[in-house]
Amino acid sequence: MIVRLDLNNPEFQKEWFGLEKEDFAASRTSLKKLASMTWEQVYLDKGLRWEKIQSVKTGNGRELYSVRLSKKHRAVVHRKHAFMIFVSLHPDHDSAYK
Image 1: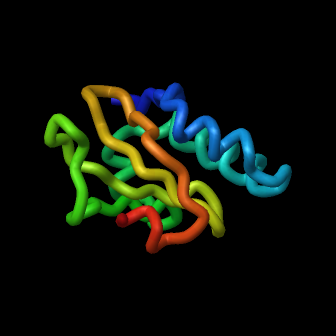
Image 2: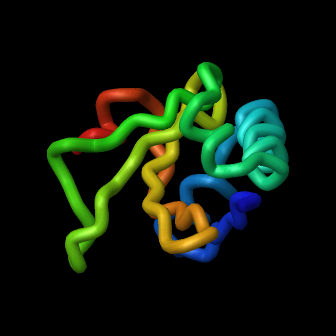
């Protein structure tokens, strides 16, 4: 099953559209890559570094994950069927886990 992206979260959009030009381009490249992958490929891809966030869940109890969009930025996401739903964007690895 090919991954479908949901980028409609206002918190994610605020951070994403505020990125510097180079960082925005790098994250866009990663998003294009994600949109062409299966879920199994996402889980195994060494560059994306899909990681479960142990310390936090969504309000309705869904598991949250971290995925690398660029060398500088990680996104917090969750999966709902075929969709990878983007929740927030973080400028460093540690802030994605709080």
